[in-house]
Structure formats: C-alpha cells, structure tokens
Image (cartoon, rainbow, N blue to C red; front, side, top):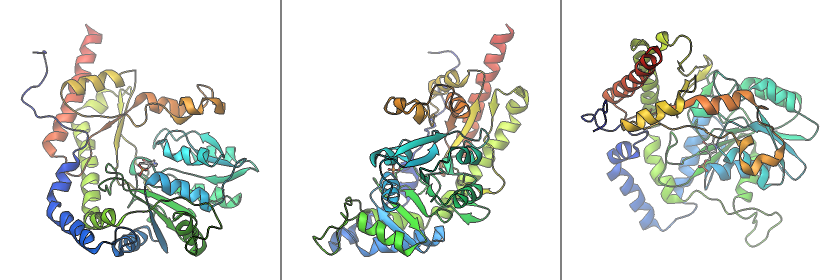
Length: 394
Ligand SMILES: *Cc1c(COP(=O)(O)O)cnc(C)c1O
C-alpha cells in the first residue's frame, strides 16, 4: 500500500450529477412521460414555458431555445450577419465553442488577454483590439462570475459594435444587480449537464431584447424557412426538444437553491483554507483563492484556485492518488490550439492567459458536495504543501 494514502476516506468526485438528479427522478420521469404521451417532441408547450422563465431570470423580452450553448453562439453571430473578413473579439481563456462559431462563419478570431484576478476578459484589452473591421465582441462570464460587462458594453457602444454574452457557465449570475444575458444584444446559455442548470443531454438558449433579433434567431434556427419550404436565408437546424425542456422545467425550480448551495460551498472553502493556515503560510503565493468582483453576483459554476511555483500538476496527481477529483479549465488557451496556430499569436502574446492555464486548478463545488468532503479536499491540499515544504527544508 502506498504510504500516506488515506484509504478509509471515500472518493470525492469533481462532480456527481447523480446526487441532484436522483432526488428529482420521479418528477422528471413524469414530465418526460407527459411529453411522450403528447407526441409534441418539437415546439411543445414546455419549450415555450422554459423560454418564458429563462427570459424572466435574465430580464429580457425574449428567450429562444436551441440545441446547445455552442449553437446559441453560432446563431447569435448568424443573426448579426457576421461574415468572412469580419473580426470578432473574444478571450483566449475560454471553452472552444466561444471561438469556433466565429471561424465557422469565416470571420477572424481576435484573442485578447484576461484580468489575472477574475480570469475574465480584460475590457482595456478589448478596446485596444477594436479595428474598423470589428463586428462583434464576445465576453465570457467565466466560471459563473460576470465579466466587467458594464465597461465592455460602454466600449462596444462607443464603437457601435454589438456584444454577444457567452453566459454558458453563468445562468442566474448578475453584475451590479443586472442579470447576465441582458447586457449585450444577445446572450447565450448552455444546458450541458455540468452547467448550473444542467440538462439531460445537449440544450441551449438565447436571450435578446430586440424583437427583430429574436425573430431572426427563430428563423435561422429552423433552416431559415418561412413560410414552409420557402428559404430566403440559409439557416441551420437547431432546436431545444420538448423532452429536454420538460425535464429542465423541473430542475429550474431548484436553480435558486442550487446557486445558494454553490455560494455556500465557495464561502466554506474560503473559511477552510483560511483555518488551515495554508493561505497565510503560503503568503509568498503557493496558492491563491478565487477573487470575487464585488459587483458580481457569482454563481460558482467552478471554484478554481491558483497554484503557483510549478506545484499545480504535482498537487493534482497527489489529489488523484487520494481519489479527490480536480480539473483544469483550461489547460491549453485557444490561441495555442493547433487549429488556431496560424492566427499569429506567438507564445507569450497573452501572458495572463498563459499563466492562468499553467496555474489554475478546479475543485469540486457542486451543490450536493458535503462539508466532510470539503474538509477532506482542503486537508489533502494542506498536507501536500506541508510535505512539499518539509522536502524543501530537508
Ligand atoms: C459549455 C460552454 C459552451 C458550449 O455549450 P454547449 O452547450 O456545451 O455547446 C460555450 N461557452 C462556454 C464558456 C462554455 O462553458
């Protein structure tokens, strides 16, 4: 047996979707059964109901269902008429889908750096990258915390460029009390199972204030067909199916309590880390807890610590040996991906992004995570650093 491995503790998974979903099993299956019996598998009344409720949460006039968060981003750019030659500004420190929608339309991705405290896109970097070809800006509300969307929208308005909010990880989040998805011309939400409102497969939704844009989204998500078999525009097929909407309606009732539980878990991590002496002890910066922007209502899709001095990967292995799940979002910034290598971003061109990719480590934060499990996670991290410290001293 490996020395120092704690064998009497149960594993702590990074995410256990089953814990929350099992509590709703009967209710969700009942909702699905109703759709089954109705035969209205597309455009059923549950889709409309979910759209209404999401529009309410996001405080927008419209919400339009689609097949995924990735499609929401693509449809947004299609509705805005993005085409080859256009430039779209976005962070490199995000999930791939924020960029692929731009490239799919033949437009040019313009990657910008992040604020090292929040990991969110830096408004000043956005402004510095605006050219006369800039046709859209896609800020990402990363890990559940709103980007500085007020500053971003001001800059965008000054240059008359539309904003598409990537709120895939941030449904229910707000900035200065105003919900994400209501700041830009369009907002994109994902129901991917690991998101805060996680569905049972793929699903997504768009939010919009403008009647014209909302109508274009409905048209473009249904083959650009209007009336039937008449196509003035080239759309795609991207719908939220009724089964998914019916099941999501059941979960949506619990979203406020899921969010509160995530926030409580985040607070508890802060306390546990402070009590462990780890943060103070490593005052020279071995780990840094996530920074919360005071204006942000943070919904904690992820809890990421910064592990400096090259300890991140060793710590992750150490946690793995103790059956504690962790993840790196994101290990390779988009400007370093092979498919974007010819975009001309040299290594070192987005220093804060590259540093974050080397140092960030995400810990379990899901709503049903127990106090004991959090204690276990923090104790393991503390013991790693005590060991590392002793090895250094010896
Ligand atoms: C998950 C995610 C997406 C894509 O959503 P899907 O529903 O998985 O297609 C886009 N952007 C960000 C930041 C995400 O986290």
